[in-house]
Amino acid sequence: MTSTDAPAAIAPAPPVLAEVVRSGFTEGHHRGSLVLLAADGSVERTLGDPDAPVFPRSSNKPMQAAAILRAGLELSGERLALAAASHSGEPFHLELVAKMLAEHGLSAADLQTPPDLPLDPVAAEAYLAAGNVRERITMNCSGKHAAMLAVCVRNGWDTATYLDPAHPLQLLVGQVVAEAAGEPVAAVGTDGCGAPLMAIGLTGLARAFRSFVLAEPGSADRRVADAMRAHPEYVAGTRRPDTWLMTEVPGTLSKMGAEAVQAVALADGRALAFKIEDGSVRALGPVLARALELLGVDAPVVSRIGRAPLLGGAAEVGEIRAKF
Image 1: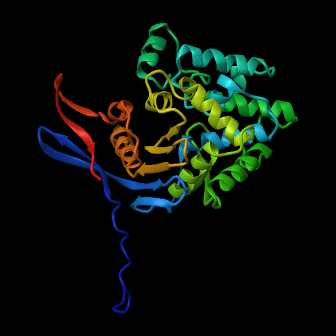
Image 2: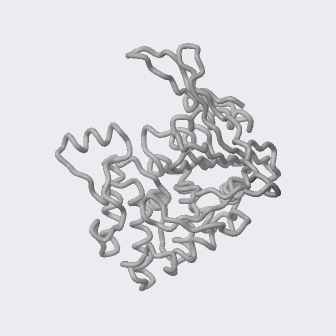
Image 3: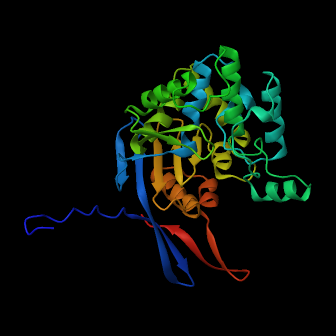
């Protein structure tokens, strides 16, 4: 570096969203970005840089499911909820995925999900105890993949390349994501399940969820939101915060994504989205609960979601708690 070269600017660290407190001692922090939208869609509060593109991971699934509907597949009820799911791998999830495949002349062998165990630890223990091994159908995205394959069969599209970013279905997914977010897709990557993944800002993600709950009844977007809210146990599972929130706060649409992404829209259009920078899902509950409180949600489920105790031996000795 010559004497005339200026040092590269260092981006400021994102703000602390949660702190890790053990035995009264703060031993760590989780940083990230967050946005809250008012009922009219205006930005009410931000932390960090919510306009910077992120991969929403499975928080994009409502948009993927809407694209499947727009492409002509007839889905409703539990099947549509499962098409937008990161399911826990409980028996009722796996049974319905198998039915959805069979209804279109498909089988689990057609899935291109990576073999996996049930996402839910309790379900995973029971699955292994029964002598089962990792399977493609058990992976938490298998409902989405089953629906993607089904719409390919319906339209005569190639099922072998359904995960190619240039496939007609994936091109339509990109259009739906950009339209709902109100911004262009900033990048395309590969999600953990192998499907194309579209990057948008957190503000765009919150706008997308808001647009789904306020969409015209009967539209593809509204049908997805309605199915998810009517059958939240198929979107997540019986022991998951998304299920609890959609069950106990009527009209709420909620979907988490890997790497600690969360998006929520309330029935009146209030919405939130955040990402914890280090991807730690252990901080997701406390941050979500605090964000819901700031949006004015007053329900017992908020405290339940926000509880994240730390253990020392078998005793509770601390907690992860929101810091904003």
